[in-house]
Image (cartoon, rainbow, N blue to C red; front, side, top):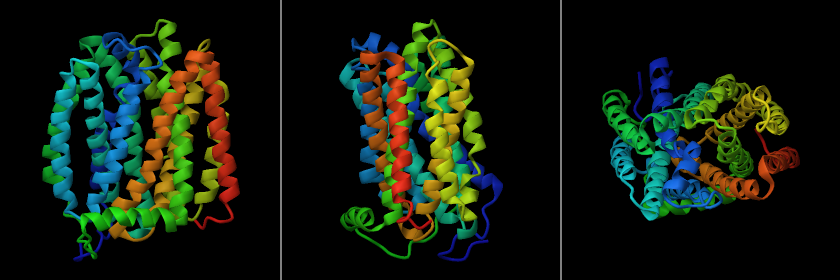
Length: 395
């Protein structure tokens, strides 16, 4: 039961899985293009280095969503906002599938990045707001597990559908799935917790700057997210090139995302560890694992099993850090959950965009080993930053 203005006393398993599945299907739209970069480059006359613009356009849409749209969850009815965004996402996906020029392609990617991100992060904030404090880490961790699995399976699905029916079918299929999800959410989403404080849109956006200036946990965990997702994007944005050179199909390249699901599932309990006060321990261990993952990943051009081991390690580490970060920033002030996740994910968007640009450029200059060296350097920087800020951060 729910008291007025209070979270659900305990969040049911079906509701948690609804949030996880919906977030996973939403975020998948942001990542469908990664195994398709070579196909898109050929069809739209782009070089390999320029193909990184496709990912960068998507991440630009992510940034706009985080700055301008996701914070609306702290101002408007979250349920109504979620359903409207999902409807617009379905329309944008259909339009992207019809893109006939590079400009139309990049514009479509920007819109899909904007609306897919708004949906995903809005659902995470929604889940956090309806969960009681003692199980918020578990709920957020499970929902975030859906996000990671969604983005990993996106590569598999887009590769398979492209081999069968072309890249446009990927986005048409996603539009249909979005409409089906719209009906399900309309029927099952719980009413949102009423907001205790009402802000105008201008005040809402201005308050995000204050959060970034004053919230120490948000600052530290945001920088960790930037470095983490730069490393993540460096790997996944460049992987298609050495595998395509070895003759792998789009479906095979995308299938490597299935390997990462094992790592994502293994880290789903990171939020529960944060609930028990072990956030710093899990962060340190995950950062070391992230750094170590680049050694087996360096063999992507010559051996299969080291690549699989490296992908599992990379995704396990990344998911554990990300879930722990969100569990910590959601500990207080449910009225600001949408702004907190928006501020935090701005760091993610910047890191992902920079990682995609760096990966394609470094691959063109130094090949796969250069990409792995870059990823290892970014991972080492993340560990050093965590160690230097550890005494100042209270988790």
